[in-house]
Length: 468
Image (tube, rainbow, N blue to C red; front, side, top):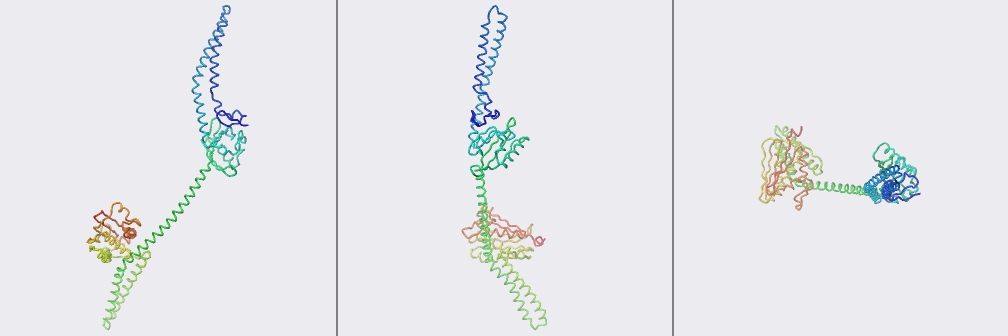
């Protein structure tokens, strides 16, 4: 049978060890008893003293007098001790009641057990979380009433606590109301080889964890889908930028092919004029060599243009940095005239061989000059220089246009970042140019101030350094 203690704790009625901690502490009834003894003891002493104060019994009188004074002294000490202990005992009682109130407010199950698993008492914050009614487990070993798998976990926990471990925590599942309910048990040692088990229903926590995991997976799927879409858009814009650059270079390509074609035509005409001459065979042989070389050059130019337009890696050969600067400047002359901007070219006469993809570097320089033209007002001036530097070859494009602010300057090489969005800028020009220069082992830097213009420097290693 079960009974409810004075502090609301449920316990078995039979074993005395099952009584709560509060039952063994002094309360007001104990204090009252001690006070009663303290009062009655001196009264009894006085009664004995008065009843035996007879002359004929003087010796006997003295004995009882001593006894009376002794009883008075003892009673005084007992009364003083009881009065002194009363505040402390009341405080202990209040602490016990406070702890029981806290336990009652928590949604947890509390069990007091012995080290062999015998349940001595319990406190249930939520009665529906109990696996069995109290009469089914109080006074019994918990291993005998729980399922086998949970019993093994509990036995292991009690063994660890008996060996000196300070606390043990584990999770398990019990069939409650026809479905599996997850619990978390925390067991700590108590005095006199007892333990306290705090059991919490973690169904809501498990549900929250599952929901969090589901939302995380959904978010990861969305991020992956958006990332793929962004990569696809980036590739599309990059391709569009390359196609636009290819269109810009169309005139330059015609110019590049026009030179070898002119050489082919001149060699063929010279061979024709020498026909019938004594050295006609030698002239014809030389003319054919020129024709083969120039035709090969035309084929290489066409292949590089096709590869560049498709985003493929183009072939590299040694070119003069001055020649690249001249070609880029010449390709931009028409655009500069339309915007009423003057182009100035300054080329160092020193040899400046660089190992480059002619199409890619030319497109990069053209892009830089175009940016400078677009940043300049009508009547403005742009300077392009090519010279040797301590790091190799430096090609500089300088304008005196509107310039770039400090914050924008930090992002000019980021893909899709542009200060000319309303004018149709894609933000890929400088990003692509940076990638091309880096792929050639060089670097590109920009210095700019609002209202004072910008200076873009492209540094490339010399051909020997690049090849090494």
